[in-house]
Amino acid sequence: MPSTSISRRQLLQTGLGIGCGLLIPGEAAAATIHELSGTVHINKRRASLDDDIRPGDVVSTSHTGRIAFSVAGDAFLLNESTSIRVGDSGNSLIDALHLFTGKLLSVFASGRRRRIVTATATMGIRGTACFLNVRPASTYVCTCYGQTELTTGGRRDAFEAIHHNPRLLEFRDGRLTAMREAGMQDHTDEQLRRLEAWVGRKPLFDVVGFGSG
Image (tube, rainbow, N blue to C red; front, side, top):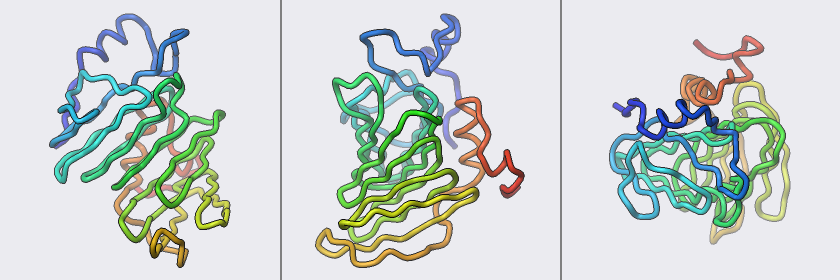
């Protein structure tokens, strides 16, 4: 089971009244780790609940690993066999996630535009939730709610959802060969509720009374 104990850094943040959305001038945002299980590495070093995740860090999970964290009103869940770079070093705001492989569930605060970048596609995001699973010959993308813009293979598609709008993208030699509708895979409404709760919100589908129990 994922560890949900409160880290020493979380206690310090609470005691000092420092929220995840507050940036100290000249300093980069640091993520709060909420769950950690199995083997997870940050910049090739074994991760713990007390660790910081900062712009430019590479977070990788093993086949048994799992990590969930939040920063500046956004929250993320990395499942097993996943590797991402969180933002870009030298940028105090995390406005891009570079997903190399694996499964990433994300919820984002409204306002500032963000991107999830893979080797074959870029998803533009503003105040929404989405799930991606990057595999060697395909990428599964789900606009869980809100609006996204997917750019891949020389085409650009806009998606909108209140309660999940998934697509499967198929590639050959790095080129898009097909995009088709798909069923909901590898993520749940309850996971989205947990991510949103960590940043003080509810999923859109619960706000409008559309979600599953």
